[in-house]
Length: 143
Image 1 (cartoon, rainbow, N blue to C red):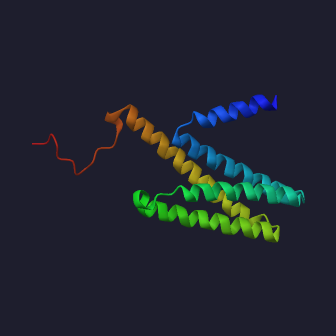
Image 2 (cartoon, rainbow, N blue to C red):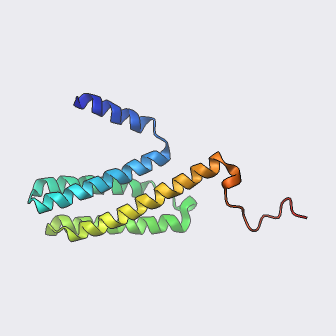
Image 3 (cartoon, helix red, strand yellow):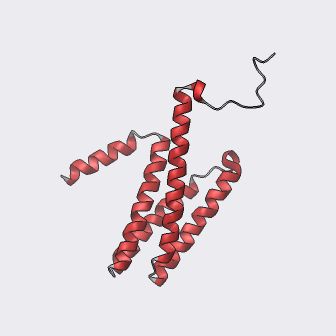
């Protein structure tokens, strides 16, 4: 049974678009953050460390994928948020406290929702060019 699930997950990742992979990474980070918080509640110190390690690995991967030339100010802001998550999760790990992880979870949820909405809007615009917002500076076709 677990082999089938593993094969399914591998196929899902290998066939996913860049956008889907981004959302999967955020989902995995959120899941690891929640598991780390549960581990703290249940005094499962080793599990807390494992889950915070997973969270940090994902955040480092997201941070390393930022393109500051293309992303400009957005990439800088994301980098700062990723730095915050790494710092707060490290503090949670050292101090065995949930509160810093709650801050991480809040940021991750906001980022996930923002990206999901942006991807949805982009897909809608690509599927229906008429639905895309018009540039107010575009004077083509006007007398």
